[in-house]
Length: 289
Image 1 (tube, rainbow, N blue to C red):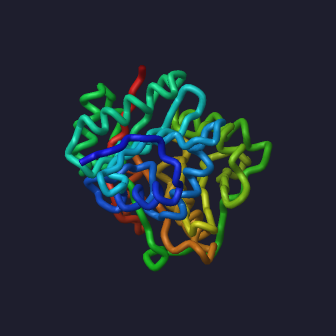
Image 2: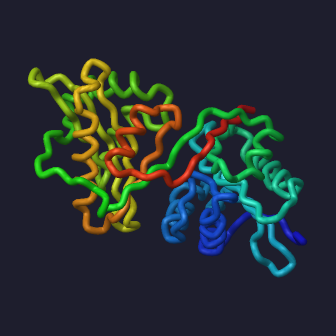
């Protein structure tokens, strides 16, 4: 029985609850990880508003334990939703949390959700609030012992003169994606790396952008792309092997995650052939006010 609905205030308590829920596929949300320290850090960096309050609503049972939660990471009029999480069967409870949260931030116009395909409760909730499916995705993972490392790296670090070609190719390969070219460049440094592949004429043929967090021992390959004119020549496979080799050169990294569209069977075959394994299937949803 739920006794209280309120704003979350305790980062550690909330991180523990989210970690527990995300370890089960039937309650898993894709944006949120499973490591308590990583979740807590992200909550502290991205979910605290200008008033010092957490952008999270929670519900407690009679023992005072969190049983449901939903929060948003706000970027202007867009918000990435963590949740809803609900370990009760009550649809009304998460509706209450969702209404309280959305009323509190009226300037947000678009919400993005990332729901595990086995999380049936939240898929039904997406239908109830009229959120639209925007794609299906695979979470792939590779462990260091399964990697065929390369001894020579042909790709080179991004330099300022690469920007125009990189922006054009990124827009072509990943239109309307979560990081545009400018954002990627702004994120470079502190383990965020952009590698470039050029031909003999110094024309940009491909790139890969990856992020390594040595403190959290986390690594993710965010983008890898080859120009259409240079595809089917083995460049993508070679670049993938190179960046995976570089990512595992950080001694803290023992596994790498990658999110790809479920429809891109040709590219996914390359990832699986390189040693990546399927970890989760997720559905993305978008809700416009």
